[in-house]
Image 1 (cartoon, rainbow, N blue to C red):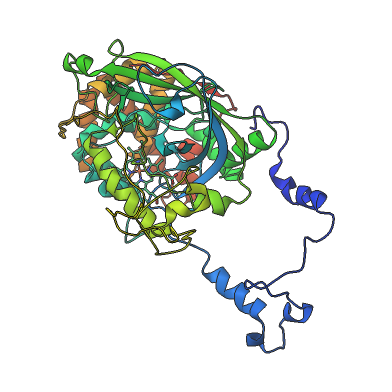
Image 2: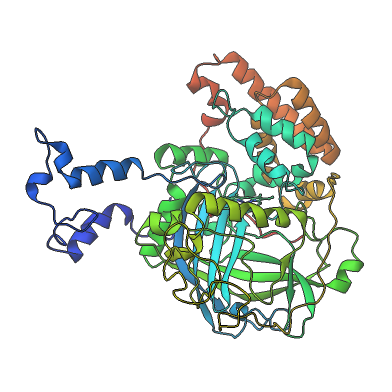
Length: 528
Ligand code: HEM
């Protein structure tokens, strides 16, 4: 499965360490730095409380887990850089995207939506890539997912949408009634749901997927002229996907296939890369549109924007400690830089609150002082103290603002637009984008049939009332699609009824029995 990768380097890590260090790297110490005597390293039949090594070892271990991310709990990270290849100064003054040839260091954390830490990467759900650009103007964080449409427009839906997809609170077993019920009560979700149920919803590893920050970002040039931009990262390896059966087969061997694939590619110097482009409109263009470009549940229509390439994102280094970098990374979509005032829709406003709170909870109030989150330039603040790491804690500088003793002062950004965009949202369902996706973005019968098969499978155990409501809504999207789902559902239902419900092998046989030969699906980048 490791296409473009020559050797599986993951199991060689220990041997490589030993080759680099032919002798032990030193004497063990306690956490307080005191050398550990051999007699304190084995404590059978001894006074166990006389060994700080023992106390360190046990108490530290039981406290190792820190709070998990509420979503995207399982992830894998890599360092790399962004290189500007084109002049986009006409559209944004952001330093990171200006100056052909300029390289900016960055960190990316890939993740998968519902999984807890150590979860299965081969499930059909949001795959994500969070990017932290360490720019000269502070950190720019872009949090992206691998499909270009989102599930809802009201930030209040976030916890409900996540709960509907996670496990039932009583049984701790996934119940697709929850997800279908939510979907039919928030039908604007169908569009994103169909992307996910299609071939686009399960990429062939993190390296071969596109990813999108999704929102319409406001950007401005040095003259203060404003534009609206969608930001897209397109894999330079070519988009490729797995079918459900292929994913099932791989997951049974290696549920961390995506991480292993990325690790191997990078350690074998087969650096994955993405082209970064912006779809752009002017504020005047927006006035003449027949759709809402700020609506995160839909795509922009072809012909209403122009696309410019900005540069390339390349990943070339695996962190020396997964926990230190990937687990402790904190991405906040509100981390924006001059020249990118950012999105104005309500989902984004909700996110401004949620991530800050999540990071305070998970990593403490000084999360931006943790190595992987630390901006590369000077940080001069009036915040002090709290959880470690506090680093220099601003030493003896004045701790109140304003002051007349030369503490840090604000500056005036001349290009900053004087007005703020106001965006109105509502929850009305528009099935147009879902219809377009089915008929025009999916390119052939195979793609349409696999979408129908995957949707039918999710309906297998769904309560009749919810199922019929869902299928009625699908019939409003496309009659051919609902016909295919009903046909496939009947076959699956019959097979499932015939099998004993508690017999796992036969219960899942309708899908699992026909593992296809491994052929990479080839998808097309889509423009709507
Ligand atoms: C109202 C909408 C949303 C809310 C309230 C929300 C909230 C959250 C929270 C609380 C986390 C965990 C953060 C942490 O513990 O570090 C998270 C993670 C994440 N979210 Fe969202 N989210 C929303 C929408 C979105 C959207 C639209 C996208 C993609 C465009 C997205 C992408 C991500 C990603 C990639 C992560 C993982 C971050 C990481 O790698 O550490 N979220 N979200």
